Length: 265
Image (cartoon, rainbow, N blue to C red):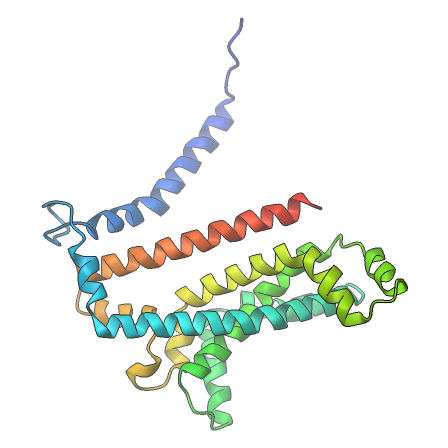
């Protein structure tokens, strides 16, 4: 039985793919491994240990920053999910417009530094006090476009006949949305919410510009930045490992839900 030969072009593409993955993820794996190094030295392995994670758990500054990060991520996710879903429902009922799509997705394309400066200037113009609340609002503005984009993928082939059937059977608009529309688009809504939470959890530039003074509005990425200026320590490696594990888990769940959304189309 003849053995199938792999085309040379395919071999080149697969080799390129492997090298790309290695370039992207090998440094992350090294960082994660060093977070368990007992000695904390990047040049010598002295034994496996959870000491640096215990030290993180006993640091009030890091714990306070972690709590702030969770508060910002949860609050901005709730706001952006509600507004992004409403926006997606409204846009899908209108005639398709490339200009409108460009306006909607502009926050996804604009560099973070530009959006951060714009938001800071806007808050200054309004004499708006900066703090944890300003970070939440800024992240919500940033995340609305992402939630809208994900939910719209679910709405592309949404069968509006079931909505009309529900109304014909006597249900009002709110009941129809709650009992018919929302359950159908819920995988897309949840995927958008997970993506928004991940983006908010990891975001640094916008939070740095809109946080104001004081540690009461310091998030975990901001705390990492303030610590890393004096060198990379094992505590930073441990903290980065935790953040990456949370981010990878949420992105994985979001991708699974997106796959369900696309698979049902």
